[in-house]
Image (cartoon, rainbow, N blue to C red; front, top):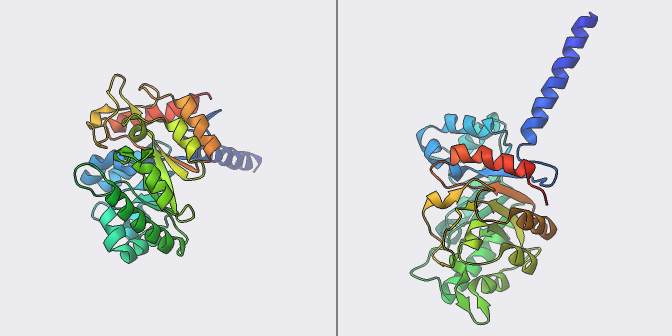
Length: 288
């Protein structure tokens, strides 16, 4: 009987250790997260085989995820598949047109998914992003933020780089920040899409402290030219965290000080499946 109890205790300890290890993926002595994965990183895998892709995400030891579509499945079905793999959908990206023209259905979907945040990562625009498009987007975001807030969900905009077009004594991002209600509209900093247009993530975290609540952790190939305002570049320019040109100790320190609440690894590279574990390992060892 004593041996039986000892076995049960050992199994319980081992089980708890395994569970803790799964929760702590990407967490180290300096970086405390919480960190998850933007599932778009594995879009090719999800398009081919959703169950296998979810197993892959689970294998990383990741608990939290950010969605970008449901790959032909109903929101209910996709949510259930996530949860059956121990994955919690925290945040989701939805197209700009849906916020503008299909808001009620979008909100219902976000509720079904159990999201804490619903956001947008690309304002539809022609040629170079301009003032009129920025003001129109601000109105769409304020309305969406109000409706979502009434349902207990926070709205955010993921900055993509084209918003740094010059405007008055600053940029169109400054205009978006001014024209959106801080109570209703939050922001997600994708570090890649801040550095690629030639901006400083540390300075922007400081300048708009309290507005940024989420962050995409994404590194950039060394030697890649910056200063372009297209919001587009070849996906092979995404590299594992820590081997690119980002100053992660400075960025993560500033993010913590600015009050970032959620971090998501996003890797758009064709080799993302192999790079994601490298990025998690980097976060576990980075010091700041």
